[in-house]
View (cartoon, rainbow, N blue to C red):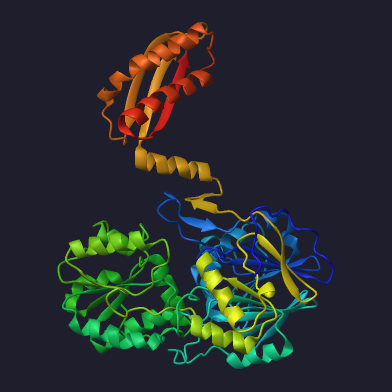
Length: 561
């Protein structure tokens, strides 16, 4: 199995008749999925998603793929193919279309409806082409065939991309649920047909590659959901992804059975469920869904609230309820259902929300104590079955952390894919398909691009490090006035601490050290303010570290007179 080396340089010019595959996100992480295909100087993009921030990225709203390698080649892009409507596959599209709004978007009916609603908020009117399973579209050098796959959102598609260099199949996110709620099966017959033609490179979902066996059926949740509804005495609050139509359908079915009304809470949830209902993907009995403002008129045992926040997102409705910062107040006897999985990295945030809800008296039902979630991704047994059908000549695991990618590669090897034709790459690693063999040829820039409010890309890793220090260690500011000619102290030093856990008065012990250091530097003829600031920072930093074993941010201000 080949894998990237940290010393990889820039890739060479693509040789004629070869296909280049460049993942800009989704490899080594869960989210930010984006892959660029190149043939004959033309580009095809599959998915363009976001990654949600973790605790060590304070103040960040979203993380985007790095578009640097595309900025000067946007005119070469034939289209963006979207495999399905989850945020980690479509969330970054508005930010790419800001650079060139007329790049065509290709996707299924529901996927396009979800992205169009999102783009409307960004005041972008895209050019779209709706496709369905079994359909083929020629997009420049790329002949794309779309295949039905089963996932945790309706209308998901895999894509087979035929080029003169060979055929590539990108699965998108998929599983092989044999009893799906919408009766839409993963089209194994289509994959078998493609296998007969010859799949030169398979890019396959790796999320559940470590999980043995087969992923449970979505409909297995129904009995558990009904059981929870049957035992709930007061309100039921369900937290789910705003695009998980199948899960919300089961909530609606249970609410209807037990005589409850449902209200959607949160802008994205209201928008997405409205779209799904209008397009016929969500079946809503008349009178079942009501406006959240009417809930006060209903008794608690007739109320179901469906909201976002299943991943502990700080600004989502459920987190705000747990923090008593929402108009909906959790009370003793409420039942809260977290109907989703834990995305790696979100565990602490989710458990913090669970603890907060429990504190106010809620009965919290989650994956850890009840079967209220099944995955939308194929487990190891399904992947083995899938590889034996597809018989790919080359395999490139995608969509997963490193452990998932490696586990998926091992599954491919077990089914007979030669180890020297299994490519384990990471974001930015360039893979060329040359004469029927996939190999790593270089690396391009593919770092994190942070969205902070209206700012895109302005927050650097250094700024995040400063935020972490401020949040964990606090800040110490030092104000000194010096003579501009001699460098001698005229006023101060004055020291103030915020968030450091050190009282301002404690710094009286270090002020003489600062004075001695500044007086000595003045004798040595040092008068430049920046050098004096560095001297103050080192002196106070050493004292704080020796005395308190802390490393706050030290902000010296030197004023010349």
